Amino acid sequence: MRINVGKLDRIARIIIGLTLLSLPFWLDTPWRWLGLIGLMPLTTGLAGRCPGYRLFGRNTCSLRKPE
Image (cartoon, rainbow, N blue to C red):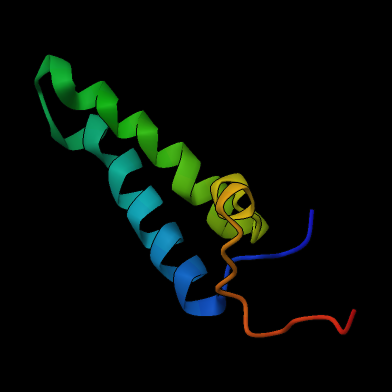
């Protein structure tokens, strides 16, 4: 799979993922484990590949390879 997540999108995903992953440390309710959802944006941000973008044909990466 090609890189389909742009630089700004990647930075936002990493920040959101880390923020969500910190929730279990700050909340004292049963809902705190919902912070594990942050694994998805963190992983896609670090890898630069989003399966959802590929499924819908989106690409926020400005560097496209000539076909």
